[in-house]
Amino acid sequence: SASCSTLIRHKSDHYPILLDFNFSNTTFVSQFKFLRMWTLHESCKQLISDTWNTPLVGCPMYILTSKLKLLKDHLKTWNKQIFGNVHSFVKEAEEELNIIQNQIHSNGINDTLSDLEKKAQVHLEDALNRQEWFWKEKAIVNWHVDDCRSHS
Image (cartoon, rainbow, N blue to C red; front, side, top):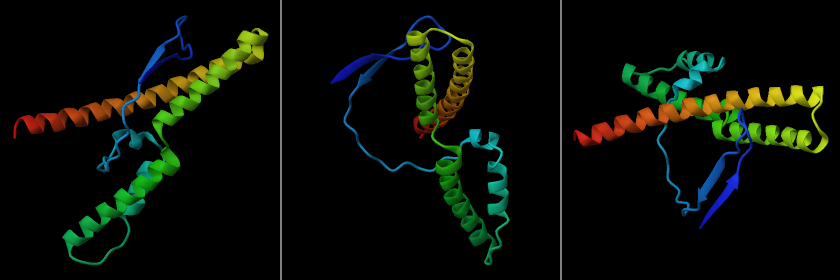
């Protein structure tokens, strides 16, 4: 089945349209991928440094693989608890802007609502930028994987 709905206006006088094609949901386990966009967050570098400075005993290869596994586990937890889901941030920012725009539509514009709308638009713009960085990185990874497969 498919559905169609309008989204909120953002920096335009047009409403974007969302087409939703309901495909069957299949689950799969994804590989861990380090996202460069994480390094833009102030706590990421400290997490990496703290994890890498964890004292371990053993041969150099054991220490290296153990620290990489530990770092992967810490980054997965950090991503869920601190960095967050970029798609959820966009959805929340859109909902926030939609509520304010509905209030403006119902009650008319005033200074308070105008300021709230501007802040909500900035919040949405930031969330959309984070999502764009995510998709750019994902596209680069997929391009490299496809390129490697074609040369095999």
